Image (cartoon, rainbow, N blue to C red; front, side, top):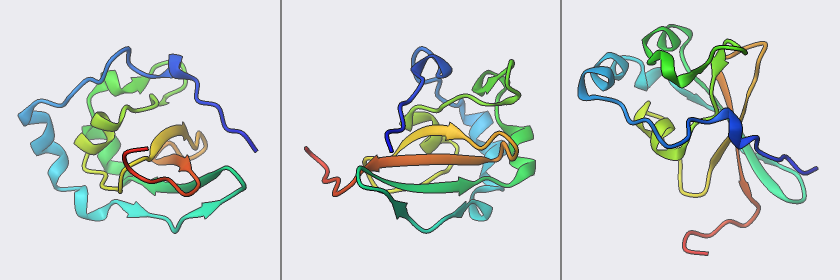
Length: 114
């Protein structure tokens, strides 16, 4: 199964949070839920569930107005929201029925520095 990323669904470049925006999100960080990892032949996957109330505190330009979900986030953006994962993960999709669930993938046997 190949999961291509539609890069047009991202900001053209990472849009970093201001200090004030980051402070608004701090209260939600401990409630972020990380799934176990699962995989196919090519990729390792996991999903990250943000608290639903957190979506209201995320800046509007992180959202895709046409879909009503978050855009696909650059690593600097999702780390800025408080999501913590090891290296190599890429945000490739939002689970549209539940827009607070972000889907991530990375190549199987990923090793930093490759």
